[in-house]
Image (cartoon, rainbow, N blue to C red; front, side, top):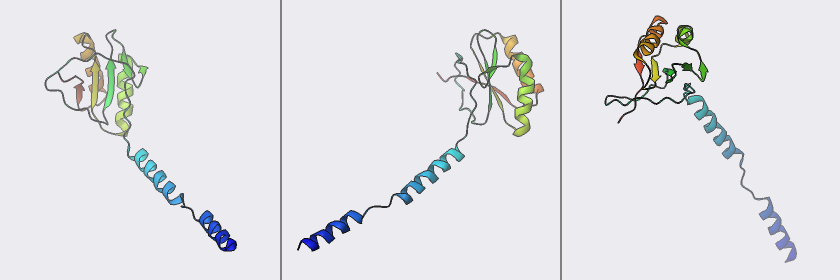
Length: 135
């Protein structure tokens, strides 16, 4: 009887669930989600946007430019100024045609906003939109 019990205990110890296939599936899912994720380059600054009743959802592939209340223009966390808009947008549009979205603070002067729109259009942007909040 003790030999029988000994064999049974040895069999129970060797029986285990193989975790390799489960880990393979988890890694494949992780790779799938990383590859299919669209990365949007944020402007890097917080802007107090105005509200608009006709505001719509933002495209995920849009080029985001931000204008602060101090008149500074930012792209991807870096201060590019008005002089840097044309070169930055031209370079981004070479890779893929997409729209430009301007996140302007509600206290930005109109002449500065128009200068940014003009630079974006001179860089080749087909559509330039303004970001707003829905009330």
